[in-house]
Image 1 (cartoon, rainbow, N blue to C red):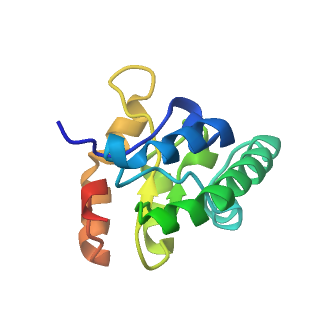
Image 2: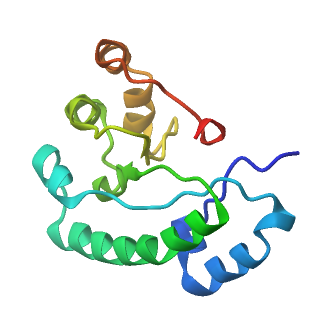
Image 3: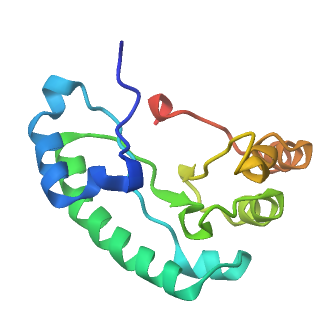
Length: 150
């Protein structure tokens, strides 16, 4: 079975020690795509709600980790989305957030980070299958892709 992408729980795959091991074994493991967790604070503040400390601390941590990793990923030609949205929402990715986010997406590829489920995070699931969100995606000409399509 072919590995789709690397992504660790709580983004642990970006921890310097773990990331180094992953890169040392990237060819053997067939790593061709990885989640490079990075969210945009200014855009997040513009379109969504949440706790300031949570947002600022996560931006600082993941910008630093992603900056460290990006050079090595480029050197090894391992692909990743340019930016990840939803991390700063802290389980608050809902239809309203997506409808505000979609027109604000930068050019290039982006990843939406969420935890859709049919119980605790049903609002995130509902947002992803929302007819209004689907209509907005079509209206804006956004192409939905998988990691394999990067």
